[in-house]
Amino acid sequence: MILAGDIGGTNTRLAWCDSPRQLFELREFRSAEYPDLGSIVRKYLQEARPTSPIDRACFGVAGPVHGEMGNRYSPITNLKWTVEQATLAGVLNVPAQRVEVINDLAANAAGIDVLAPDKLLTLQAGKAQPGGRGIISAGTGLGVGGAVWDGKRHIPCPSEGGHYSFGPRNPQECDLLAFLAERETQTFAGYVSWERVLSGPGLYNLFLFHVARNLGTQSIRIPDSLPAGDAATLVSKAAMTGQCERSSMALDLFVSLYGAAAGNVAIQYTAINGLYIGGGIAPKILSRLQGPAFLNAFLDKGPMRHRLLNTVPVTVILDEHCALRGAAAEAARL
Image 1: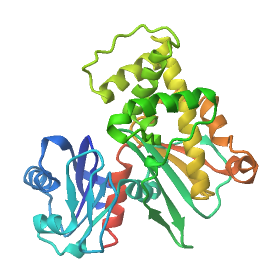
Image 2: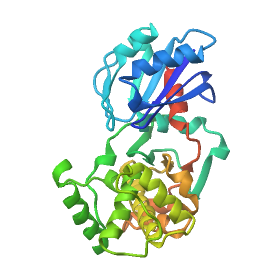
Image 3: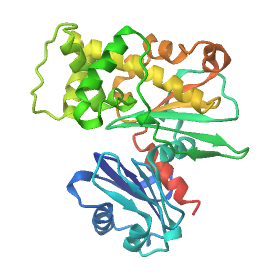
């Protein structure tokens, strides 16, 4: 029996299964409410009661993974945890070699092949060829990953590409970079990554940029005390319903930046088999992603437009449990 986990800075999802295509007793926990992952796993096993003992497990975690097999560990990027393979093996009472800890984007990449067709939405049909894949996933943070083709299957490749330096493309985005660098002086010494613009908090940063530059009219009120992720939800809803011009302008910029970053990922992984858009934000803004701004930015890469990008299939992942399915698929290989 397999235990699969998707461990994020906001939520931890666990499920047990025999196959990644059918998850049982899927439960979600607020990560910050627990001292460590082991505490969540213990609670889950007590409540979910798998029909057979767990004999293998895999956890996709939102952070870089270190160490060799049997001693892997990962400090979670947006959480005060370190996930340790050996500790989890002790909690599950299985050998450490039967527990795997992988990057969450590697888990997402592993889950693509087990998704139902109706959980994938095409933005650009392209012309898929055997080869690499790229994946970009905006949510609480920004994840970037890929998969290489070994002639038989796609092997997930993790990265921390969401923390690449943000690269502006025009005068407005240069102004945005300067605005964010000034805001991040105390916390990140002025460093601005792509995650600062492509995430829930990133969308709110774009809204604040429009406020600071007095761009557009504003018809919603956002309390200063509201967490950035919650504020971004208000901005997104106001934009999608046409309620607030300033929110709509911020979301338009977000979508264009998302397309530009996705193009970078497709180039990085030579994604001739496809570029996939994961995360919790994309399904909520589908109509904007289906508009021209995303693909225009995706393709706007000079000669790479015709050498690569216009043939890359671009697909939105609609299954919010893709990473969980991928973790289950990787556990099945142990």
